Image 1 (cartoon, one colour):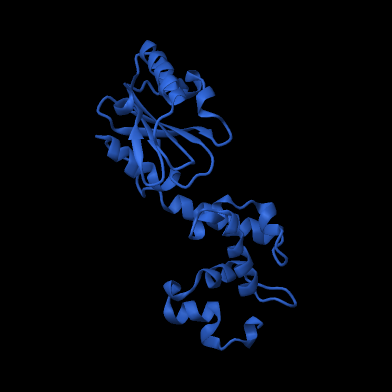
Image 2 (cartoon, helix red, strand yellow):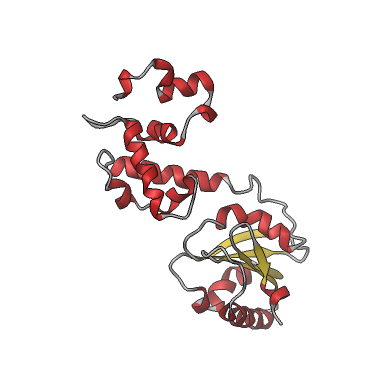
Amino acid sequence: MKMKELPTSERPYEKLELYGAESLSNSELLAIIIKTGTKNESSITIAQKVLKLKENSQEDNLRFMQEISIEDFMGIKGIGKIKAIQLKTVCEIAKRMSRPINRKNIIIKSTTDVAKLLMDEMKYEKREIVKLLILNSKNVLLKIKDVSLGGTNFAIIEPKEVLVDAIKMQAENIILVHNHPSGDPTPSQSDYRVTDRIKESADIMGIQLIDHIIIGDNRFKSVFSEHK
């Protein structure tokens, strides 16, 4: 059924206006982004095909869309490059909306504080992401640096890549954070080895590595507390 053949109250735009965004199904929300269909299919039908892409994903909600490439979206008839880019843009906006509104004047007092700060942003990543929290002597957060944004094996990250900004900022404390795409935050032997290397290098520069946190699927662990 084409969109114009639906009752007015069942069309996504009108339904959202009448009943609110929460009343729309996933396919209806996506149909608004996709906007137009093809000669033979409505935008809702195309949206339903997008949702079927999750068959190869372990996600049971819309987060699976973060894994879908522009090319995969374009593999669906009715989605060209512009619509595919729009879908990826919405995914990135949603991810950024999960970040804390204000990262200023944040004091890191515990491992839990780090997890609260970065869990929503990192727990669903399918690539290994490495971040560095740069702190002053009172553990006030000065900067979050992206050390590696996917595709790089954490085990081969060099200490100089991690420490360069902390040295420039004359920081006194740092916390290393990375995720395990498997969802299991248990440190590996390579995690222990890299932690030791970075700690030794930081000590030489007069900077204290006070923790290394691994983010999993709603779970987290400190390499320091696990290290025997």
